[in-house]
Length: 488
Image (cartoon, rainbow, N blue to C red; front, side):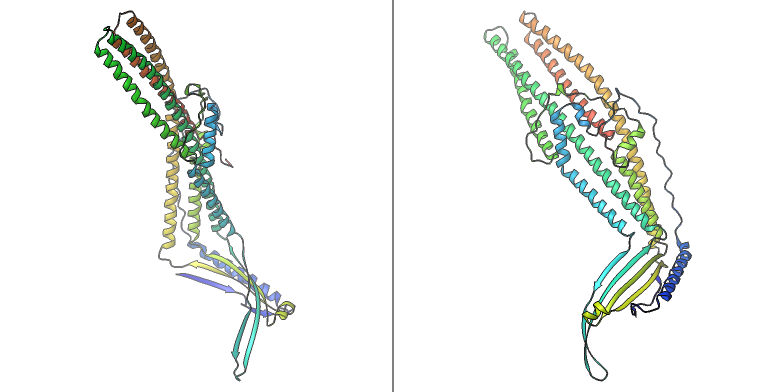
């Protein structure tokens, strides 16, 4: 139940436009406003006590667990640092046509419109009405009378934001709009990183396919040589069958890689908002440039990552909504005014109308709501606390992702060096084994084993280089990718 305490001026009191009484009306309106303000101040003691946020538990580390250099700033279009025009074009297409990103931008526009709705409550509402009417009545003497009345009114209503509730709702709407802008930035960062990682994975698969095709040619030569040796009696049937088995095993990997490549192309096509199809390629995997790594401090990470900014604005919005919910326990002050003209003919309405006006105000204060308003305040407080906890979790997750990215890049670099050395040793071992076989000092199986070792090392080297490139993409994503929302 809500009790409405209202005092208004003379409702629909008619007077001539040049008549007197304006002074008394002004005095009456002033007294009315003073009375309403005094009553609202008296009822303001009903407000709920403040509900402070939970104690913070987040600790900002002074530095990362490890550093990899050289240091370099993160550009907004960080994917151009890989030096691959095809990669740059693919990411640009993804940012322009990705379906999820378009949804995120549409939600951003939705909350910007919600912000304008909230801002509109700070201004008076004006309504214009024109209402001609015709009525037929019977007088006490039995005379039939028909009457036409023309009336035009302008109505104004304004809620005085005594306690700042409307301002807090506007603040919450503004923070929500900023959060949605940050969400769109986070979606753009995720789409760009996914497109870059998917493209680099595709180039790694291309390199593995090229290696498998080259290995198949080598296996074909070995099979032909083993067949000639067997047919001439210089080798056993076992060596010939072993060479045939290795050839088939290598041939088997080619359709597997081709299937994986086509599926990766289809996934990238969907990511950029196109139908499944081929993806243009740029330089080979070995020619893609390793960009200099960013070396950002935690404070810079907090300013750069859009998801952290989104979580921060969510806390601001929840806190403003909590204060607005507390203000619902306070009385509201609303001023209304109506001015209009009336005439019994259209000519009278235009030239000699009757002037009508009314002015007043009302205080609406909650008296008994069964605990509903206080429960709403508690709900808003719980939502605010959840936003604080989510913000802390987001920041911790960002620190973890960045540390993991730094560790991955550093360790993969070390692993790449070791695998490159292993490949060089395997290549030298194969050269020696082939020479020994040609000179009759070793069997075909010894050379075959050396070929297997070299092929395994080459595949591992390609996989590690692909993983290293995608790890750098993940590190760019973890550090925010250079996105900076307006006002940050």
